[in-house]
Amino acid sequence: MRCRTTQKNKVNFFHMPVPAERQDSRLMRAMFGSIAPRYDFVTRIISYGMDRRWKRLGVAQATLPENSLVLDLAAGTGDFSKLVRERRPKARSIAMDITEPMLRLARAQGLDEAVCGDACALPFPDATFDCVFIGYGLRNFPNLKTAVAEISRVTRPGGLMVSLDFFLPPNPVFREMYLAYLYAQGAVWGMMLHGRPRTYSYIADSLRSFVSIQDLSSLLERTGYAKVDTRGFILGGIALHWATKSG
Ligand SMILES: C[S@@+](CC[C@H](N)C(=O)[O-])C[C@H]1O[C@@H](n2cnc3c(N)ncnc32)[C@H](O)[C@@H]1O
Image (cartoon, rainbow, N blue to C red; front, side, top):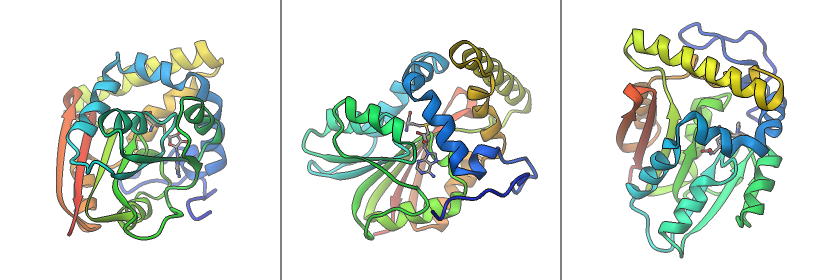
């Protein structure tokens, strides 16, 4: 599997340590496999219910043809697929994730096309999809550039990529408060639900070594996307990107 790496103590461009889970797909699968049954509950709690609103906006602002074919990448339990189905009943959504227990939950919620796969080696021909949605996925991929190149490859000219993810807020004071909040929330829920604080404090670790909102926009522009729109929430701690592939 191309995404897999077991290199330890890796650092990113800013010399921030890259979490072990992002360097080893077995650890990534083990982490998300263990939290899968409670994933939806914790996501709603940690975001105070705002997560659903952000995803709904991500879909609402995406211009999708009636019969569109979309990929819900790093789908988890398939939130984006469900929202696309609500908005475009004739659309077809393929939910793909590297963690099988997440996909089992997606199938149990009526998403028949839920397949296991790696974002860095997508098993689809070029220009297959009208849109690729990624909810909190990019930050977890071991090689962001490879994953973005793959997403661009499988998107048709004029098609879209929509990503929702965490980012480090630009204001340094708020950034520290935000990280402290995510660590504390994550540790409490990790301890209460799994007896392991680390389970959810991974969120804060992973975003420390992730790119900024602007850097992700620039990467998309360099990878075949002609137009990139963004909308930030929580003072830049969360953002949506809508990127249109060059025609
Ligand atoms: C935080 S969850 C997001 C789930 C869902 N998209 C949402 O918005 O709630 C991140 C998901 O990314 C998946 N993932 C991590 N690395 C991946 C990879 N290389 N390829 C595909 N999926 C991956 C994990 O298994 C996990 O289900």
